[in-house]
Length: 389
Image 1 (cartoon, one colour):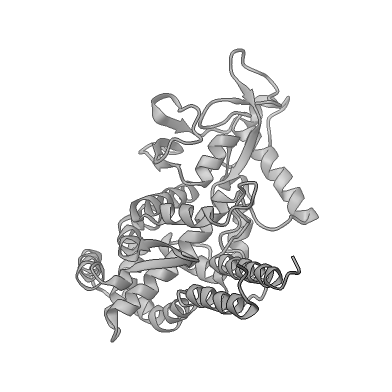
Image 2 (spheres, rainbow, N blue to C red):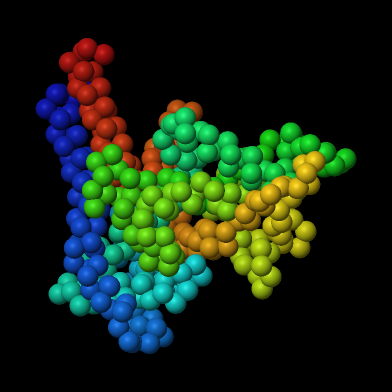
């Protein structure tokens, strides 16, 4: 039996309410307006880092972990997908120094300590965890799952992308750094080595820190960038400078298409060794990894001169160790906190009929997409109820 028009509208209102009641906007505003000034003050204090970390861990375990508000829930109709925010805070604290050194770890510890100064400590920790989850970790994960490298490229952007691809492929010897497979356009094929289509991956995707259309100080792109600057202890202080660096070969590696998908999905990462530009492979999930390098070790070297009749005046920059370290730290946080699995389950619900995830680069975009689908569903049901469809 068809539902009446009023029943359909009431159901849509209920669904929309369940979605917006868990909206992250209020928590992000609390982080920026209330927590941020205190974070900055605490981080500049003379308190030893070890004491700050111990205090932060105690706050998480005693004030937050057992509280029901430590679980972030996202409602999809009658189904709820969730992740523990205390695990997000703990993972951020554990891995910040891998890409941000002491300053990165000090930022995370200071953020947690700032929450303890609020009247409602649990709410403040919930706001902090929600902000890091939705505004910082989500853009990294979403760009990888959707294969989303940003909006449609302009002519200038396409030119930069072509230069990026040419430089990175030549530097890596037209060879996948993970599998050793050679590009189908390899100038000097090695007998017995598989030839496949290779792509040049941005180590850090350009969608991270993309500005919203209505650019303001509270835009999700700015928030993600501000957190990244502190977490990774970036020397870059503006989004424009950050994006210009992402377009260079130092932010690129050559990969076979399956390996590229797995890299952007954080199924694997590279861990630094004592040798410069030499990394150990760490695998979290072997999906997409067709072959592993000898001894699980990857060595970067500039091979661009190997295919030219004359030596290049300027060598092609090798992958930036800091970019690789940031990717590795994010991978660790996603897997150790459960946030990666949470995002996988959530984005799976948004797949279209062909199994593709919509190209969403920020959490507000995802929430807007959810609302649009709810409205489309309600309008369709309304027309069916009156016999139009």
